[in-house]
Image (cartoon, rainbow, N blue to C red; front, top):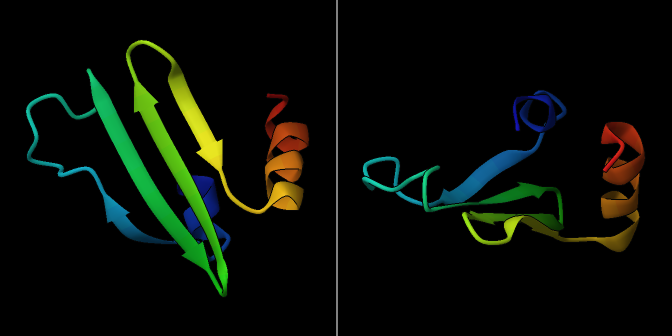
Length: 66
């Protein structure tokens, strides 16, 4: 997340930082860069799910060896 923010991605929305289960049972972020949107969602059953521009998702896989 911090790396993406350093690269210019901005958090448009996120699961409330005040929610008692943030990062434990659920978490989510919507990031934007220009006209691209990246959705990141986590839960304790399926872990992280990423969706967004296919080429960017592929780049993330290669960069972070996902």
